[in-house]
Image (cartoon, rainbow, N blue to C red):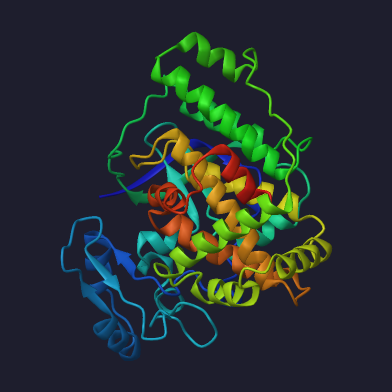
Length: 388
């Protein structure tokens, strides 16, 4: 059953400025993914009149899933080249163009918006949408969060499969961690390490069900162990490069989203620290605000994914490792792809591809396991990885 409800949502301040690029997208959101339809959406669509040409497309592309559920009853499968068969030559959706927004599945109606209603009302947009990234990269100031009245027409959401102890402070905790990521007095690798220390202290307080300690953390009254300066030698950075290459190699085997970017970067660097440093210097020269862009991407991802309490059985220490893996992927693939480019749009494309992997799969569930498999499973090795 679809719910047409209005609530006050906490949203990032860019939210009201987002608009779809329609056919102007370089990489369409439907590319490479089956488009899921609920039972209600499916029968609503099949009962509508449409042109013979669109009906032929639907008859060949839309089919009931092998194991249908009310929320995921049917799907439009991508073509052999990964494109959605509903996508027209001008980039627009044939369903939307001919029949209007109401003919779309709720997945297409909402994307890239993520609506969360089970533990407070939150809404944001996914980094996997290039229009969202372009909006984030057009600003220098930190993302703020504001309350807006929003109405959504969407199915009743299922209850989370996993419950985490948050002592009733989930949203406060998330915003507290986001403030760590927005601490511009520290370089990005040090912000991530500070985040790791904050998560360790948080894990301790939550495991002990200690409301007093949690309040002291959130109010800044409990001192978190300060970061110890650590000299990074070339050996440390070469090890970090090896970890990053290993991670990309493992992901290339599992994901179409980043495979082309990954294979290209791995072939070019081929373990050469000299090639990497040269490409890194070029990357930071042509994208002088790269650290601000990374801050915006990670903050937006943390809010969209409800970090660190995603609906997956992942511990807080492993959530930290997964976040570091996201940062490392963005750096490694971005530096590799931009090595001979100067157009920021090229980085937008590779970053969107990374988040198509991160946001549309169970990446956060298996990222820590892959990092541990590579031997990158303690603070020092993680510091090597994110300092590249």
